[in-house]
Image (cartoon, rainbow, N blue to C red):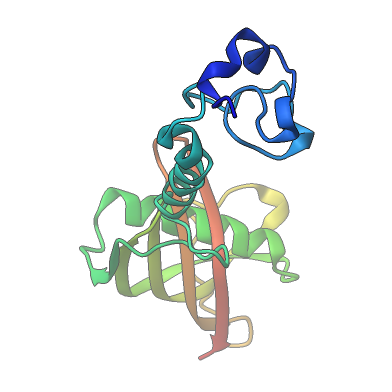
Length: 186
């Protein structure tokens, strides 16, 4: 009986002598005529191992992307304390307050009165955990002013909250996203 190597040009032209081999790697009949990547032609050991090798490469590529199977980001470094004056902390805090004021039903703008905790975690982004005390200002939202607003002095108008924000930052893409926003009255 002739071997696969003896089959000659008909072996690689799409013909199926004996119905056992297909063009390219040994594969399913549906893949007939398609070459599966760098698989060698012919019936040697490499041709038999090629589909397994391709599967192994695909599995390694998928598991090394840094994202777990459930979609949660891989933590490279857990939350650690960082200075409150750090530029990315200030940027995350600005973004958190912008989002808070946009979502708030209060007609007045709130601003940070005190930063209680600032931490950074490294995942596929830089995540900032911020624990702050915020207070209602004398500026109404319609004024658009929020940098120079003074905190309410009238005891009837005062309102304060302890808030925890987690902001994901990708400075290399100019992206900021709110991951968590929880506030409790003081």
